[in-house]
Length: 394
Image 1 (tube, rainbow, N blue to C red):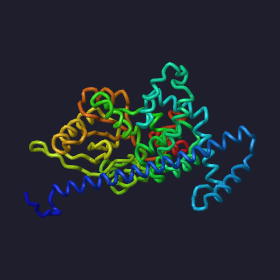
Image 2 (tube, helix red, strand yellow):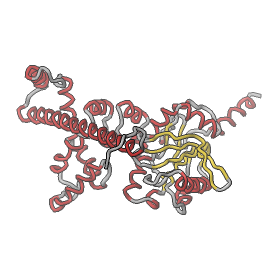
Image 3 (cartoon, helix red, strand yellow):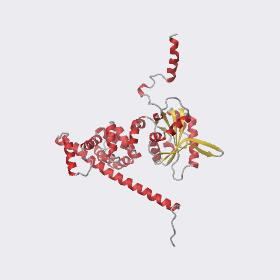
Image 4 (cartoon, one colour):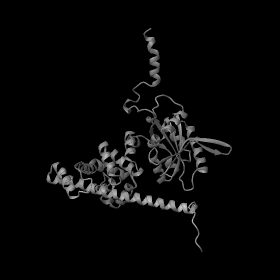
């Protein structure tokens, strides 16, 4: 059969080019990750060597400066052997080999939480259950063998940044796993720390029906993408607003909103039009999540959560799945963002819903510490007191 001219606009060729581009990008990312793992592995071994020999031979801190100078002399074209960098290598090993960190990693092993690498390692180590310590769930030796693999999941610059910013071992472990899983840059990581992502993810309850309506593997991924509350301080709102004004502000500062949502969210549109029968409906904000491969619909509410909001969102998701979802997409997800919520009311409202829906709070200013909640007057009480004050002097 004779060959034919190829039209660059031919969809078969366009699809072929797209596949090759995706493969090239994947290979480059894989190569970069492999290089990073080797580098972090080297730094881990250097840090470990310094700690162990200082302990064994009672060497003082001067050994770090001396080693840095000798390595720079031996490898003049290689960067990374400054005294400060060697101190950070020592700090990396000392931090992650501490009893506190061992305990937190063991806890994550038992709960099968975090990165796929953590889940995989936990499964691998189940073969050693006879030697597992009852208290930690895994022997300390096995965890120490795994730790270099865990720290190699993120770049060195991120490690130095985290070691400077985070002291709590549990928070440090959380940010490392989240950075590796969602590909956070250092700027995004800084924003997540400032927004107290760890505290909100671990200490506050998420309310959704994901386990009831989604496969286990996808329910876990969707749970990771949802926060229990969202920090909208960047909007600069100091007064009561209507829902449309809140939506306007979010669109004006869309970049900051996407950073708050988390890595993977791509904006599709506002007041997104849906047609069903002879009627039209509008979703406040519609996003697509690259890693969940799902449409994510947001409904904004300036007041507290009401049960009817769940029914409305369930309907929207049915229409989205029928008319907008691509054949290889996962089910669409709904998030109702409101000023406050009662977890019991949310739970009962979602019980009969067939689509994945989450309910989260937002706050526009720094929230009151928990120990002060209920101990200060409400805005209404303050207004009443101020209005009554002049009458006392009459």
